[in-house]
Amino acid sequence: MTDHTGYMRLALAQAEIAASEGETPIGAVLVRGEEVIAATRNARERLRDPTAHAEVLALREGAAKLGYRRLNDCTLYVTLEPCPMCTGAMIMACLGQCFFGASDPKQGCCESLYALASDPAFYWQVPCAGGLLAEEAQALLTAFFAKRRNP
Image 1: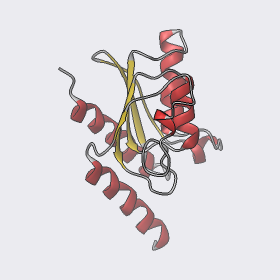
Image 2: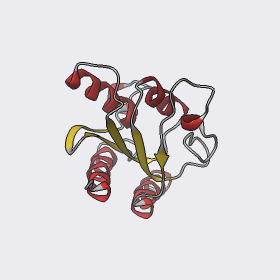
Image 3: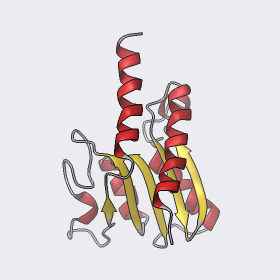
Image 4: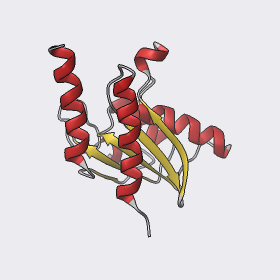
């Protein structure tokens, strides 16, 4: 039996580290079977890389560790609904499935703004489910941005 909550808690721990580093608190964990393949966090500021989202870093690390770009037997857990770039990367990686915490009505492309992950126009669809520990994920984001706006 898969412990979805446990894997999301690992992603939340990565998000907390990101916040402590001054990064937007988003964490991701890539799992294959019961094995954690990658645990990453946003690193856009640290790496000065606009593509260094937690999800992209997890997919890159996972593909490198597994030695294959197709991640159809893997599950991604991410604290915030993936944006268009990350959702596109999930499709291109042929990801097995994705669970996310907080919804993102401004940029979320799994279900909120657009359902890119399930668009039949693409050769691969990624089943996504949101709301996993959503309150905790949203609380991290809210606290981070409140502190940033009112130091």
